[in-house]
Image 1 (cartoon, rainbow, N blue to C red):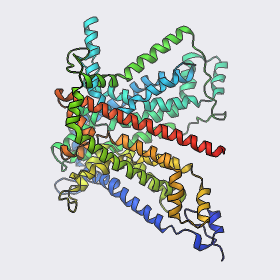
Image 2: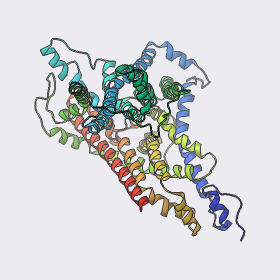
Image 3: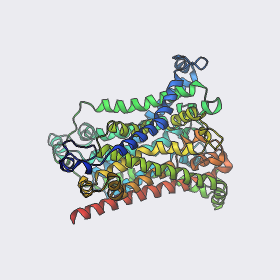
Image 4: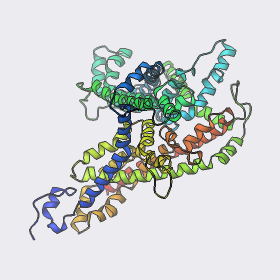
Amino acid sequence: MPSTNRSTPGVSAGIADRLPKWLVPNLSGLNMVALFIALLLIGLLLVPVAQVMIVAFQDPATGAATLQNFLDFFRTSLFRESFWNSFYVSAMSVVVATAIALPLAYITTRFHFAGSVLIQSLGFIPLIMPPFVGAVAMQLIFGRNGTVNLLLRDYLGFDIPFMEGLNGVILVQSIHYFPFILINLSASLRNIDRSMEEAAQNLGSHGMRLFRRIVFPLAMPGYIAGAALVFIKVFDDLGTPLLLNVNNMLAPQAYLRISSIGISDPMGYVISVILVVFSVLSLWASFLFMRGKDYATVQKGGGGMAKRNLKPAEKMLAYGVVIFILLLVLTPHIGLTLLSFGTIWSFAPLPDGYTLQNYVTMWEGSKSFIMNTLLYAGIAATADVILGTAIAYIVLRTNIFGRKGLDYLATAALAVPGVVLGIGYLRTFHSVDVPFVGEPLASWWVVIALALMIRRLPYALRACMAALQQVSLALEEAAESLGATKKRTIYKIVVPLMKGGLLAGFVTSFATAAVELSATIMLVSSNQDAPLAYGIYLFMQTPSGRGAGAALGVVAVLLVAAGTLASQVIIERDKKAKASADMH
């Protein structure tokens, strides 16, 4: 039987040319899967965001296109103040986060420093605590009558407004998000070409001049990547300002307008458009800053900066700086733990006593929150892994038209703030009745799981992409040459070989979805349907409930920590298993 001369999408040209036509798999099934995923992403991401955009440019009375809503926004002093406050808080958070991350990154990569791995690991811990969870705990430590200011007032006669107004938001956000700068900056510092540093030293450049003129500019790609992430995350965050009672920022204003006035209020949509535009502009600005500049290394692998030993005095100073920074960034965890076990903590450096009653109260009052979270995050993570696997296979293994667009569309959820997605869902699905349920989709608990799925899909997708890239195409070709169908090859060969990456993607999506507040706070229609993050928010609204809220916060932190650790263990074990298999 003559062989085909045309290669088929999803099969390498070589094997397609060698196989008879009847053996070449029919990819109509994958085309249908791609079409289904595209429609799903359009319906659950593009359409809600487009609804927000459309309403922002509509006259609420006539429905005609207009710019009046934006003019009204900038004519209103509260909205102008909120805009500049959001920009100021985001910019200052980048500055403070840089002041925290830069010494840790430089000391641990530039010098022979005992415990550098432990220091880097401790520096990542803030990421496992959602910022709104630690906000109240930080008030008790750094607030006007918190631990630090009480001690300053008693012994030195003055206090510092750490948590007053916007200062509190900046401090909480900086401590939570600085690991983004630490991770990226440390990686860039390790990849600096050692020969460039040595050349500068031979020409007489040393100390701060060497760092300022050579080292830091060469590490700029990593720094800009981390700083852009910090800026976007802070600009879009909703939970921290709400819990600190700072409402004159954009995200809280969008939430308050929609929740108090209703989904017909145009200002909530105008604010949502501004949030999305600023997220995109921040990424674009970081790209423009790096464009046209060459950071390539001469040596293979960069060589890394030459490490040197510290003198005794330098070592004492370095350890002092590191310990101070680590104590600062761990204060939310320390404060949350103390608050969860404390009886009364008011106008005192520490709680008056300690008890387990907060955990009992938490368990009695939050069983539904925990069970709902397990259900919603479980559904979201499972769907994310299934969609992520399908998208990864379509992008990496087929020539289906528009496959790259599918990847971009799935990743676009990163640029959409949670509050914007929540508002979009309310607007899009408030009139969509669910058969046999008797209520609109916007008020049905399933919509929360859908929002979490879309929000966390990029995380699972990246894990699935990485896992599939490690599966050799030759294994699929061998199976297909022996008569296996495409469907059977995927189920029996590809997915089992991807299991480590799939499990890591599931755990990451589950752990991060479990503490999502920005989107879910917009979609909770009753306390019975509320997830864990919303439960923490409710508990923290009253002083009497803060102990139980802190206990629930500890549960959330442990959940995210366990998920993060499990995903790292799975990834490392999978890498070792693949390396061992390659050696044999």
